[in-house]
Image (cartoon, rainbow, N blue to C red; front, side):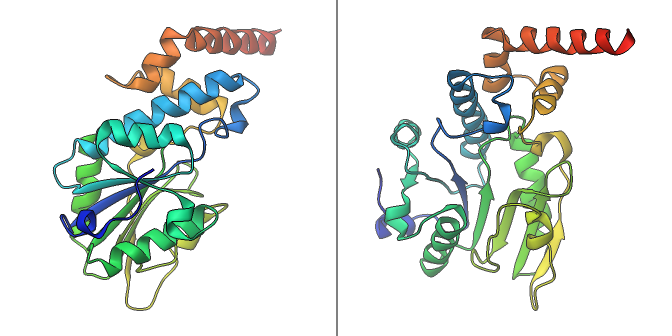
Length: 244
């Protein structure tokens, strides 16, 4: 995996995007009732592909950084010519510790803004990234912008200028944690609805299939694999039982 390299850090200092990624085999356990282990792994890969398409394709994102201990994630980083740091690289253990360690390192090397993006946002696109970045740029620095999940509980994207302006605290009720007032920091929420919707439950999958976003690896996988048809059948069966 790629280790931190000051020659790489000093090239582009405006905006970096960081995507923390669990091992593909560990993700989306809440979908175990409708997807087997192989399907969950394939879906995680597809969703990460959608997120990276949006970030790598945006001209205002100077560098994309993956944080993961999964060799398969490191291979994806190599294929896309982006960075991948491990927890060992950052001398950190666990999601929040690794993200905060990366934020401190990047801030120390002069990066102005860090955008932490979860890898399960299959409808994220370049337009949504542009709207988020433009909103954030309008705030006086130091600034934090949080894009919550649809329930107003989690934080799907967090932007911080400078990168360590706040302590990242992903987990239950992270939106409340990240959007809490901080002395001297402009903290705002940014609601991007479907574009920033994450996938955690079977209902989230069904919503994604119904919306049919164009040119998305995730939707393509769900359709090609037969999962979309299977979930549609389960939904019709549930509705039929409810009418009996």
